[in-house]
Length: 112
Length: 110
Image (cartoon, rainbow over all chains, first blue to last red; front, side):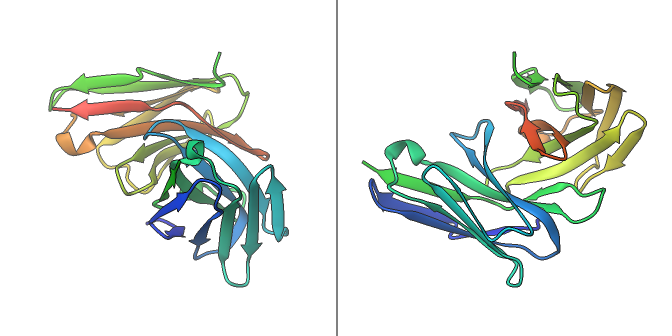
């Protein structure tokens, strides 16, 4: 079973627009991470937000976490064609023996 | 050199064959993982190991086995490959600061 569920499943925007992707999860977490995957190949770690954090920024990326709603959002500002990729949220569960559990991903297309 | 190296990068094998996917890491992490990715399903955990003497099944371990030969090496075996094991396989390591993924092995079973 997959912990995280991303929304929407697919997103198509114009270059320069902002892209917002959402993730919901079911159980308590230690942290939540966002990854990017280009063309079905390697995963690139984008950002990690811990359960005691509410917002985090990294360049054009902004991640929020609401543990009361068990949800997170990833905002990519001023999108570029090179941002076209699949984006996954992954939750690292609470507890010493936690594992990283992925959602099914969001396909983002940025039109030039 | 990559922190997490997977070999082979691509492999085509026949149904019924035994195949091993290898993973080695230079991160010095105790924890290692094997994930499988099918289109539209994200990554699913096959097996994980928190140290050399620890092996645990993940969500989809049936048809797979693993071996943790050393802290740096974690191999995944398909004892008798079947077509629905065609997928992209990722190895990963972790410590308290985060995860590092390999580039993946694309396996096709014909």
